[in-house]
Amino acid sequence: MIAAGPKPVAPFSHAVETDGFVFVTGQMPDTPAAQGVLPEGIEAQTRNVMNNLSVVLKGLGLGLEDVVMARVYLTEFKRDFESMNAVYRSYFAADRLPARTCVGVTGLAYDALVEIDLIVRRPG
Image (cartoon, rainbow, N blue to C red; front, side):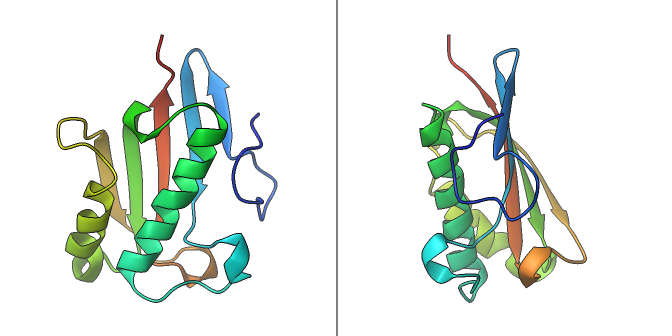
């Protein structure tokens, strides 16, 4: 179990590593400075989620370039899909986009609009 990342709000690790793969728990759009208040809008929430994921990966000596699979959960799929994609894409090199699943869900913790989890392969 790995402790890097924002303080968990439930009993889980931010990431677990096994057999050269790292499974990163879904990150929410909260930040320690926000004290539980989420930013408005899918763009701001997606940026916060991607930044939280980057913090977890950096704490493991990894980066977004090591991501092999992402799962995105949206509460307003039709409304927010394109806007989320624009922000999400900006975090990855055009020639190094991970595989991805994106699904609409009926709700997320704290009424968040987006949550993203990752599967990462450790180089080497």
